[in-house]
Amino acid sequence: MEPLHRHFEQEIETLRETILRLGGLVEEAIGRALIALVQRDDAVARAVVEADNAVDRLELQIDGHCMEILALHQPFARDLRFVTTAMKITTDLERIADLAVNMCERATELNREPQLKPFIDIPLMGQRAQEMVRGALNAFVRQDALAARQVIAMDDELDARMEQIFRELVSYMLERPDSITRALRLTFVAKYLERMGDQATNICEQVVYMVEGQVIKHPGVAGVRRDDDGA
Amino acid sequence: MPDSDVETQPAPAVAPPPGAPHPVIVHPVLRVDHLSLWYGTAQALHDISLDIPDKRITAFIGPSGCGKSTLLRCFNRLNDLIDSVRIEGGIEFEGASIQAPEVDTNHLRRRIGMVFQKSNPFPKSIFENVAYGPRVHGMRRRRDLDDTVERSLRSAALWDEVKDRLEDSALGLSGGQQQRLCIARALAVEPEVILLDEPCSALDPVATARIEELMVELKDRYTLIIVTHNMQQASRVSDFTAFLYLGRLVEYGETQRIFINPHMKQTEDYITGRFG
Image (cartoon, rainbow over all chains, first blue to last red; front, side):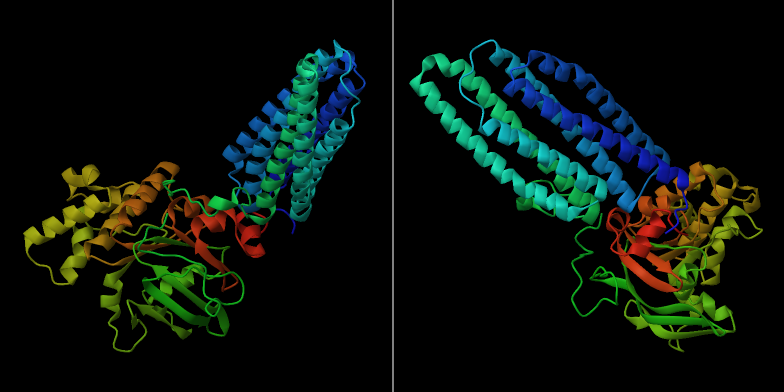
């Protein structure tokens, strides 16, 4: 269908591109945070922390652009769902970047002490988290609800790995009290990666809503309307 | 938001025409049943069925020539005034056909009033514009007329602006005031349904906002059906929205669903401005 409002289409396209740029920065932050941790590289960790400013700026830019589109164009239907989705997933993406920064902070702390154990599961978790974020962004850009659902299904694996790492680190702590500080920091890292999966899941749930108009999050309270009193 | 007396639920498997499911209106005030209409040989409405909920605002939207005004004018048989019109199918108003030969159209048009795009006050005083209908229907006592005029003007949110100049000509009022006077005139004969055909298209945003506020106030007591080109207006004021295209009812549903998540591609393309 030939659009009547080229100007509006252009606004939507620009918004989509800005979100992709944000997504690219976020993916990169996860990858570099893993390098900072696994290769014990403080310089890379610092670079991730510094790059977070760009992420924050893009978040504000996207928020402002969404508000502008809502106020000036008053979109309906799929356009409305696109803009509200953009606003919500931007918050998720920015949170993921913050988690990468948190990872780098823990990495810097860990780098001051001898390595506790070889990294096996955490890099795997990191790869998975990165794949989920990339998959979520692709699903958003391609408006692909099926792909979004496939990404959501990956989250269980991340949760299971987190549990496994937690158990392993607890056993370290029980055996060697001098490992507690490092083991706790690593537990945090695993938790950050697990949270990234949750944020990617949020994005994908929002993508399904954007594409199908179906709310799939919180299935236990589905069908809530504005006038429900929550009782 | 619909309250408990207009229950909506997924439509039963047998009822809806092809396409999107219709809302199930439990106590419709008007029922349109397989309605088709021709102007001469040109078919303007194609097999339309929908129920209009009581004491709600229903909006008809669609591009020019889609049949929304034609459909609106079927409800008080204004199309009767056009010789070449032929109608098939039926419309029931509170359970009785409005097309039956014994139906008195004057009586029908009292119960189903209408407000037009261009305000059309009589070239008489403000008072006489409102008192005209009740007089025609037999009201004679001055006190009754005074009461009716005041009540109607108050209901139309015009009383405070005109109470000191009721004997002035209605033609001296602003466009927005004239339109509210026309609404007061429609209310004076105590209708049950008010049809509004593009009531704000000639008004500025402030006058438009007044009429929209008024509509929301009136729906406690009246059923309103509005034809509008203004999608924001339909989304702001109506409870249910019907989208018509090329004389066919494409989609009908609760307004918030139609504007957030329409089921039909044609509806979506229209309300997102991708055709029109």
